[in-house]
Picture 1 (cartoon, one colour):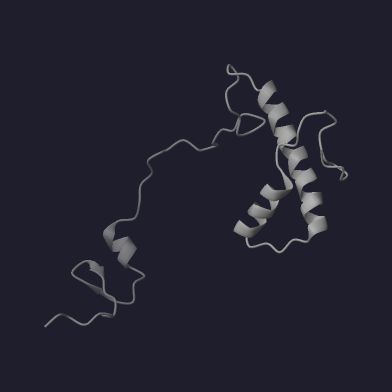
Picture 2 (cartoon, one colour):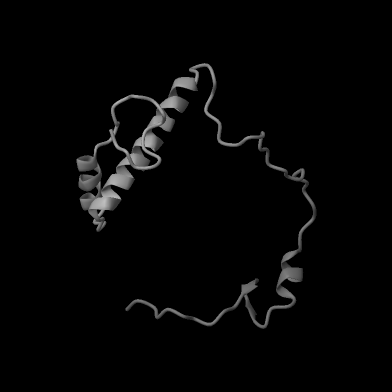
Length: 112
């Protein structure tokens, strides 16, 4: 059993994660950890895993997963149709028009 502070959840259970597993995880994550850090991390990760196991025991199948503590609803205004601009009103402020449309400078060359 790991004797570092925070190791174990106060039970006499075997550690869920070993020092060697922590070293392996550190190598996979490309983390440089010292021998002392391996002991500390093993104890901390063991404690985390014990807490996760405790929460898993409490979770009931009849309780739906929760994403928010309170219900979330969208606040939207009613969709009301209102008159828009006519074509001539929309084009009235344009610097250039052509055939009832906005005329804009050409930005792409035509294909040959």
